[in-house]
Image 1 (cartoon, helix red, strand yellow):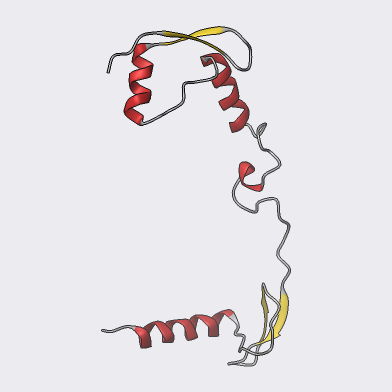
Image 2 (cartoon, helix red, strand yellow; image 1 turned 135 degrees about the vertical axis):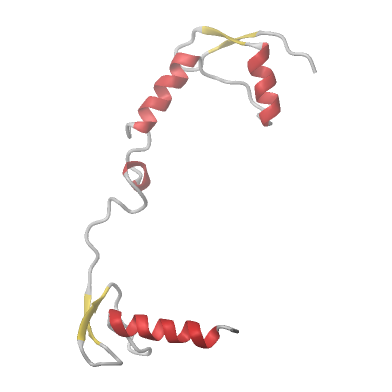
Length: 119
């Protein structure tokens, strides 16, 4: 397939820019169906605004990870079903299942892993 330079108009600033044959070939190799809609300076400005939080800054993941805008987790005091010691968990116990302190939970978990293994 042969490519020829095309003149396109930037959707942001309205200036004309050239979509070169080389760029078109690159787009085709990558499987991109759409031509660029912004000139290189507007694309760069858009990338810059996204990386600084200007675009989509109301989303929790744009500023440091999923849920980073949440506060401290609410902890609930329980009595461990195994050892009887008080502990805190990050969920509301329902009462129909045993709830363990972190030490007993690790112990229960490692016992379950060993009993479920085939070796």
